[in-house]
Image 1 (spheres, helix red, strand yellow):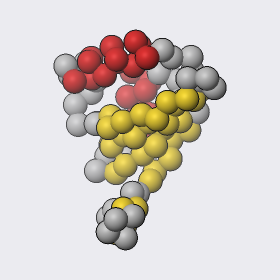
Image 2: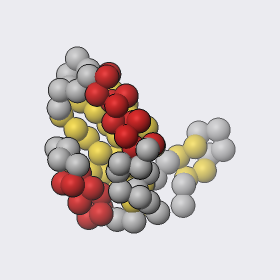
Image 3: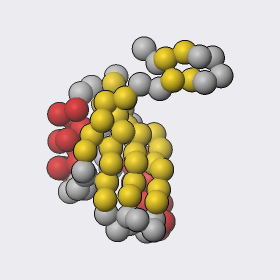
Length: 88
């Protein structure tokens, strides 16, 4: 599974994110496409979300299905500073 950072510029509230996270955990999102975490800048309406998916196109379809706009999807790998290892 590949990892992606998705950038959203959208006005969201903490409450919206809590509800979305609850829906996600309950299985309201497509199976096999984990949303891991989000970095939130509520002042500038910017959200940087860590997802996993088989490919970028699958993730684009998920956002289309849930009607969530996004600016860009970046394929990424994690570099662990503690171990000096780059994710495969």
